[in-house]
Image (cartoon, rainbow, N blue to C red; front, side):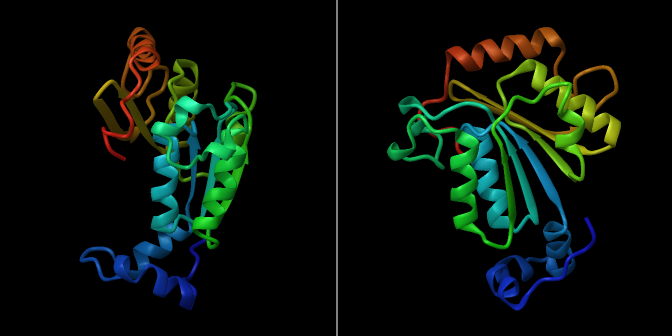
Length: 200
């Protein structure tokens, strides 16, 4: 995306950011000029989306094919009781638009697959893997390696969390082997975090 200048309203909105030492207007305009892809709109993905919106990212693409259930509400802060049964990505899109009208939000109610990963990662400057899905994680890793993009990988299980920014590696996962991906997927599925205690 080309570098975008801040409007007077954005300068006011992000005034605390602009006064940070080592940040400033140029850095904020780079954030505004960026598109992020988040795959997974659960506890990790929804929290990452909230923070990216508050930070002033220019565009956010959110991919998730699941629906909201009652057990999600203890840890997935974008959703409400009236959202039960609805698609997470679609509900998240509206909530995020309400948070920051300066950010373009796209939601995709679908599964990341070999058939759509190129299209979904196109024009993005950062990829966020917030899934508990080994195949999706491997696809994002391969896309990050191919496009030379930063990939943020995160998992939460039980009371523990793991966050690792980096870049994809050709032919192998960024962080874990296939066996380790499968292990952590199983751990995540059977030992979900208690509320949002691990933190955003």
